[in-house]
Amino acid sequence: MKKLIFIIPVSIVLMIILTGCWDRREVNDLAIAVALGIDKSEDKGYTVSAQILNPSEIASSSSGGGGSVYDTPVTTYTTSGDIIFEALRKLTQQVPRRIYLAHIRLIVIGEDIAEEGIYSVLDFLSRDPEMRTNFYIIVSKDSKAEDVLNLLTSIEKIPANKLFESLESSTEAWAATNKVKLNELMDDIVNEGVEPTLTAVKIIGGGGRTLTNVQTISPSSVLDFDGMAAFRKNKLVGWLTEDESKGLNYIKGNVQNTIVDFDFEGDQVGIELLHSTAEIIPHVQGNEPISIEVKLTGEANIAEVNTKLDLMTDNVFYELEEKTNEDIEGVITKAVNKAQKYYESDIFGFGEQINKKAPNVWEEIKDNWTEMFPDIKVKVSVDIKIRRVGTITNPIHNEIEE
Image (cartoon, rainbow, N blue to C red):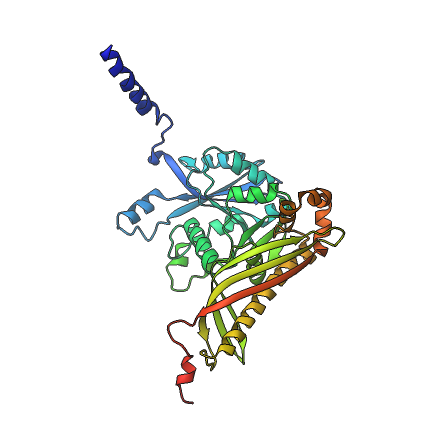
């Protein structure tokens, strides 16, 4: 009996150990993809581009060898098919190893596909069991997704990593972009009363496909985030400028840090927004027209002053706060006007907030919300408090005798 008691747990442990890695794949047998680009092909199908790590280059870099100047850290393979999965499998005719998707960091959707609709893209991304969901999704603007993935970048040797890290840092420090993962995009498409947005990426310059692009002080071609793409359901309907993208992020509570600059007494003043909180308040009262109130609060520092000011004077502080609030209010208003008058797309989620506050009212209007949205009155109020002036009090200009 004692022997049996000993054998049973040992057997269970052995079963776990021996079966736990039945589908384990050797790294040397895999072509590790770090980014996928999806474009519309010429014959109505899909063109898929896979950015694959170069194992020898990555290994030499991690060991401190620095790699060969003749090697690129990645290779981008491209082919077409009637469906996305077919095109991906056809890449095996070019790639000597099995393409492994578990380390994808970025999906780039081509502008042409985005305009047609991204349901097929989302179905593929959601259905493939090998893909994780911690990648970001962006849209290429004025270029193909394939071209975006073919451009070599400086600092970050792997272009997919460059875009991934740049998207994170720009979202946190500049606020004209947004990090959107698959589940977040799906939520915005499926949920009622809100439409999706994705960050736009464009190529500035030309000739970035070769190593010379990263071997010079000033690269001939760079990747740059350029505002955001606005959708209605699954189709791209237009682009938001940098200011309009900030306005969108203000409303959605996505702005934690950014710079606000404006003219003050003939020269520029820069204010660093340290954090902000947004509140969307639907007003649904009887027979009164539905309206939306957007309230934004937060704190800021004085970041740069290019004029002579006495910052120790209370009224100067109040005037700077007022100008800051006016500037942000203007940016938010620009975003609302673009979405209402040009795209008729509720990218802010006003309808979603109405549904939360007054679900009975939403049931009555939801089928006509697209037609109603452009005429909804939106009131914006901003209250940002300037708390600090930085490490110096008054501007340097005040200390210099002219």
